[in-house]
Length: 422
Image (cartoon, rainbow, N blue to C red; front, side, top):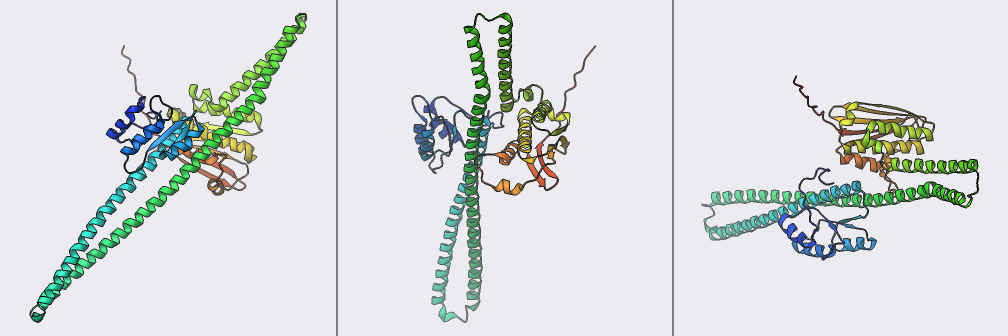
């Protein structure tokens, strides 16, 4: 998973006793650590890593299925956790954010060391200036009787002292500026940590809502149909004396219940991960999804797309589909639109997907700034696009509707030409 996401410097081990020695040799920027391991659990491994990380920063992302272990792991020094079973997209987001925080930590540490070095140099310069000043005062006391003859020398010494004082002031100003930059970086780091915490909570709540919705739909749809099938089959087994016609009618009803259950299961599977996206591509998957929405709501969907979009990688096509899915779901639920246009085109160095509707507008800035732990919504679309290096733009105008625009990098791939020799 990490290789597919573009990370190249990766090592792994299934022996917990090797972790500390490997970290001592390689100094990893991130350690994904399972808490449940034979011989030596994850908490013991973290205690060993603390002896190596003398600066107190423990770059550990723990993986656990035990709710009680999460808080304990954070208290033990872990920076974050992933709950089992986990979503690969969530893990990649956690890994990306923790590596960004790690880079900021290293940069802050570097700036701090530089400040310490500059401070030591400044103290040395101040000490040297004090020595010069003391020597100057001794010289002035000893040669006070020769003031007339040494006026030129005193003026020269005074000029040197003035220049040294200006240099000292410049050093102090540089130190003050460096300290301000350090404070700004620290403030930015705290903001990023708060955003990471908020995003983590939103991801967890979104997962729980999805599980709750799937459970409810399975119970209301498939389970009820299976119970009805079981009742019908039980009735058939208890009524062996039924005639062929009655038996055929009951079997036909039972078969309809089975077909209905199959349709429901297929619908759940398409909502979770449409097989058409992997088998046929992005454009057929979007066509099928729009057709499903048309059957539910009286909305006209118009889809135009370039064939080059299918040359994108699996990750990029999946991101475009999920963004379109979220945007169209919002249109169906909230926009009260009658027409929706989906246009996938190619611009300079990128693929652009625009989704526009003629429904009611909303305050984009207010929705983005709102703290809503139950839904990811626009934040989820933005995070998905940024994971593949893209950008997301949303414009909502009263009386004209809403347009969602997603752009991801795209370079033309050369198609090899095969030469057939007669």
